[in-house]
Image (cartoon, rainbow, N blue to C red; front, side, top):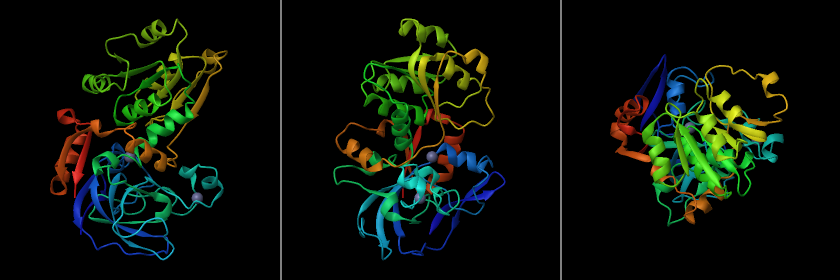
Length: 346
Ligand SMILES: [Zn+2]
Ligand SMILES: [Zn+2]
């Protein structure tokens, strides 16, 4: 079968690989039907994810059809259409039992697919703990609608949940890339009075406004963001800030735009350490929430997709088939042609 492989030293390429096989009783083998490229794949390519293993098949955001199941698998059967969770989790350890599946202590726990174990930019893939990591796709939900369930939508949903958004809040979302846009969609579920999107790229802000994901868009190259947000909040600042940009100054912008006693969720992946200037923050009494998604809400997300309350298909700006995946990578990495997400049909 064909697969996109991380070859180390800044290189990736399509290789011929053997079909995956059941190794553990909890394993499921999937035929991938649709896959996509995530910015984390680009981070892996450039060596920015130290735990990624050269030789691994990339891809952690995909949907497929079950072809084989291990003897202990109960929830899915051959022929089922499923969305795949970015995180592998055992469901039994200290962290799993508390819903912190990102910190699952199983050897293949956490973000393993397409990083430490072979992922889904391939014709077939082995999913460990298939009962935990696969979500059935209802007949009336398409592959495109389900594609982002396990990674982007999970991240957006998780960021809004840990932000503890209350009805009537003003929510600022820094970064209108795929993660920021999904955070806006999820934040909307909590009925905030206003969602304000901040970014540098006009096409992303335009999409956020056009699709009704944000009520107000601010371009940080043109507007004084702090000033604008104060104007919108009777001088206080935002109740909740979700930082999904990970830019040079966006951590600072995040805590500065939050109101006293507000919550700042840091979902972005930073490339460098950030300054926490405690003297300036003193008395602002902020709550910081940090880190990587606990993708434990996929069944709930799928229900919301089915009901039409979460729809991330507007992120799909480009479509192609697997033959063209290397060209898709190039366009995605260069941010050419206004690309936000690819849908790649197998
Ligand atoms: Zn990802
Ligand atoms: Zn676990």
